[in-house]
Image 1: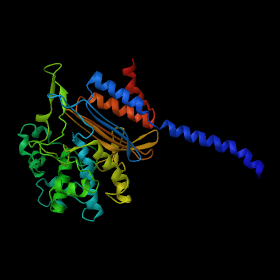
Image 2 (image 1 turned 90 degrees about the vertical axis):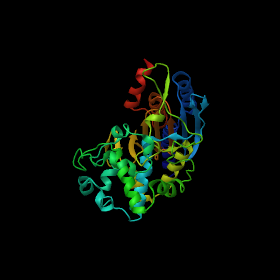
Image 3 (image 1 turned 120 degrees about the vertical axis):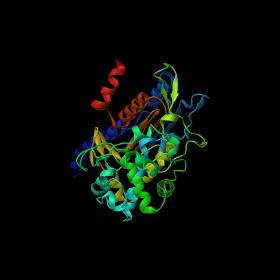
Image 4 (image 1 turned 180 degrees about the vertical axis):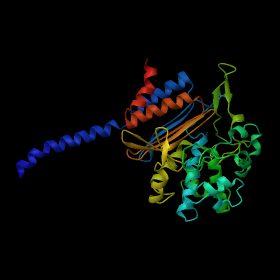
Length: 374
């Protein structure tokens, strides 16, 4: 028996060493990340905040660039950034909370809850599941919104005339089309069922339980402190910056446009993983991919991808002067928040760099960096 143990011991040690090396390969090199981000700030106008957490606690959190370029006011790690479509995570979470409470069924049609919804083809054929997964056939309202005075759009219902008469582009459930209009309808359903404004409901049932005290759909014609302005390079005047104030929504919506901080988004990720906002069963339902989306799968307001076999869940957000991402690596214990208020190229560089440092190389990541090395 002793002889058997002696022979087995080297195998056990070898297994432990392999396991240790694999664990070390998944540990990001914070110095490498910081050096590259500072280089992007110096050479490519990186502006934003990047946070990396391990097991729910920050191991890296730095601010770059300017919240207000005109007055040279720098970003802080506590600065609030426009989330763009990242708000869809909160809208879908609110819907799933109502599912968990037995007030919504995912397979019910829109018309069950919005009995007077004017577009009967939507009311009679589109399900809550279709809206959550962008398989409703509904489109977007941006073209109409851009023609009008944006300060007129403060409530969810204000947006309805912009898209309510649009025809479905395909039979619900038969295809995928990213739809901001669909998420506005989800906001209307939340309001109808709860008797509260969408904004009050998510604040009371998501932001407060998760302790996200700096997150809200702020009205931008008010003086809101510590807000980052988004910037893009002017095409008409090379070398000049343009802000995104007149290309944005005046107040956040169920489809996007609210504001949050890196710390608050980490709090959301922690609350999600600890089943604070939903029970375990519904958390899994919320975060699991349902339909093909780019290189991954779209769930209920959450995008699910895999890198070298490890899951990444979260959501991106982008608009003029906005490029963000929440990445949760549940298998590896990491959470990443990227919030930028400048040109999108820096976001892509950061996202791929951190994915490589945490999850390892893939052909897609390596191909992204090849042109930069040549």
